[in-house]
Length: 102
Image (cartoon, rainbow, N blue to C red; front, top):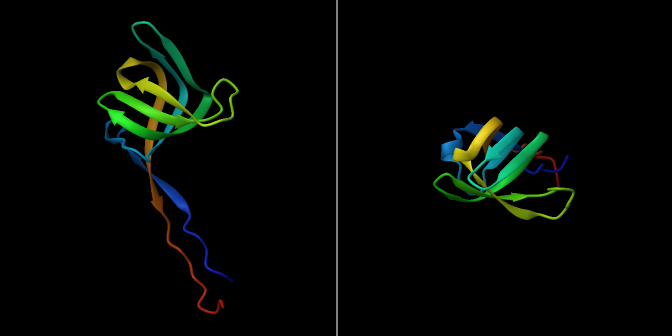
């Protein structure tokens, strides 16, 4: 059997510790700001953190409003009104290598 590529697993982290490359999961999250509102994850949605500036997080997201292309979405964590937002750090699982592979 040939070597497998590392499988990705995820480690839960505090949302405030999110950094570029981390994964964010939204479950029915509603953000309400001064002049906007936004619903993320109905019922759930995943995105990748691109940039963090204090409470402002810029995400790489796809399938937003039916658009299947990757796009930027900016959220302000302080504007979370309801729902759940979780953050995860990708970690590699062990790689199994068959010593008999050629």
